[in-house]
Every structure is written in structure tokens, then in C-alpha cells.
Image (cartoon, rainbow, N blue to C red; front, side):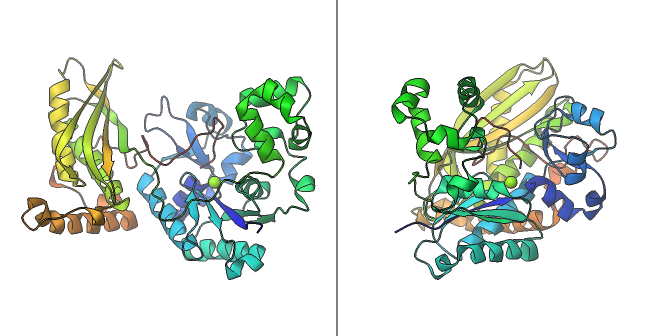
Length: 418
Ligand SMILES: [Mg+2]
């Protein structure tokens, strides 16, 4: 049976979330900066007004400012992006158990055999309306018989549009597109193809497979399968665990950290974020790692195994601080810090819990953690703070948002609009 696959792509995701939370930003050219450190920061996302000035994703903030001097650059709010990403994912899971996220702002859905599959274009329109009404965001949707064309479809017309690519029309819609639009067709491949005058997907699709194998190797063969609409890779099920190896956050503070109190404050904040993400993924960390960069850009890294797997911010912060003390000699002030959890265990609910196990009593603490998560997601990180985060109110070195290490993101060697 021919499959019915949708690919949903949130339009300008990071910038849209920022504009939803602060409507004033709709009126000005704005961008989300990828690093708190504006000296090295890049543009992660921008709104249409900034786009009109020629501001591009992935360019340096200083470069963007040269084109658009009034550009408002806001820090990313990773927790917010996670929140909306999760909400959208839950919505898709109401239609099928085959939902596969691709980064934070994209998902594939396979609705083959469901009542909605009879008119998938209508389902796509319904989803766009729901995303607009329920989340206040906008997305574009591609509908096709394989994942590759569905993804091309969501990119074909945007924002807020549906494109249906069928076995009958794909030669008209897909084949005139540049070959670089194919998923996993990187710059090296496209420039090699350009040298033999192959620039469109259609030209590429009509090449001999044996020639492609010798010219581009195995990766080229895969692209040829994609170009001809022959991709059969399945959409993962909701229940398939996303293969996340680690969860971490890092930050460069607005001013260098001068002493242990500065470091502790930062570590607590980072650890709370890491713990919150662990809880949302229903994972526990077996190993904690700390990453330190000083103001001379020397890097120190150290890790330790937890006595017991944990998703507690307090626990993670204590281990991270111990690691910091072990690895750092304070020859220089600290420029940036990262906390990472790895050796993640599976579903929390599947963990063997013994009544005699002291960790059974941590259930209460976990519930508190979950309440804190919800409050922060709804009202922002500052709605609730640990005592230590309130010390030295005159010295607020922590940025509002944290963009750093993440998991589940994806890079196909191309610029990606979030
Ligand atoms: Mg997007």
C-alpha cells in the first residue's frame, strides 16, 4: 500500500516563539542570537522584517548588524522551544503512533491506514490551523508517499502552507528543484555535480546508478534513490525512544566568573536546566561531566559516575561543583561553563524501585522538580529560583536564556533555520 506521510516544519521557530512571548518584537527586525557572547555570536533565527534587510541565519551577529543597525538580538530561550516542540509533538501523536521528530521544529507523521489518510491534504490544513490556534505559531506541511518528498513539500511553500507531492506529480514539483534541496545532499556533493552540469534533482535522478556509484560513492546512490521517490525508510514510532546519548547545557556568562560563588550560581542554574530536560525525557543520568573554559580559552573537562542514577538538579549541581573543584586551579577567571549528563538510563517508570531503597523517598522531590519545570516553562526561568541564585543581586552575570549543547538537534551540513 502506498504510504501517507506528512512532514511538519514550524516556520522561523525560535523567532516565532520569541515574538509570541513578546509581541513587541513583531514590530521590529529581530533575531535570536546563538551565543550570549556577542563577540562570537551567530544568528540562529530571524523574523521576516530582519530578513528584508538581508539578515541571514548562521551569519555573525556583527555582520547582521552592519546590514541592519537597528536589529534587536534576543538570547534564545531553550526551555520555551522545548515546551512548544513537545506540545506540537503531543498533538501529532493524537492522530498516529508513528511520529518522528527531526530537530526541535520538525516532525514526520505516517498516517497510512488511518481515516485521515483518505484526505491527507485536509489533515495537513487541520494541523496548520490547530498549531496556529492552540500554540500561536505557524508551520508548513508537506504530504507525500515517502519521508524525503514530504520534507521537500514542507519546504516548498512557506510560511503556513500545504504542499502535496504525489507519485503522479513529483516529476513536475520535485525534479526542477536544485539537487542541494535533497536531504543529506551537502555542499561537497552539489559542487561536484555542478562540475558535470548536474544542478537539478531531475537531472540527477536520470543519471545511471552505476555512474553515480563510481562518481559519488554510496552516499550518491542513496541520494539517487531519494531523487527517484524510492525512499522506503520508515517513520519511527512514538514509543521508539529517541536515541539521546547525553543532555547538557553550557553558557558563557556576561562577565567572567571570578570566584567559587559565581561558579556555583552558574552551575546550579545549568544543573537545574539539565535536570528539567532529563525529567521531561523521563531519563536518569549515570554520569555527570563538567566543561570549563577560562578567559585564556583553555578548556578543562572532568566527569564522574553518580552513586545512583539521578534526575535531581541539586544532586547534579553538587557533583558538578565537586568536579569543578577537582579540575580548576583559578589561575584565570572562568569564561564559560557546561554541565552534561550522560549514561542515561531508560524509562523512569520501568526502574526497579524497592521500598527499602532510599531513592524511593526521592519521589516527593521529583514531584517538586516537575512542578518547578512547569512553572518555568509557563512563566520563564526567573519565576522560581534556588536560594543561591538570589545571592549578589548586584552581580547578575547569568544570561536569560541558555543555548548550548543540546540533544536531538540535527545537522546535515547545511544551514538550518530554526
Ligand atoms: Mg523550521
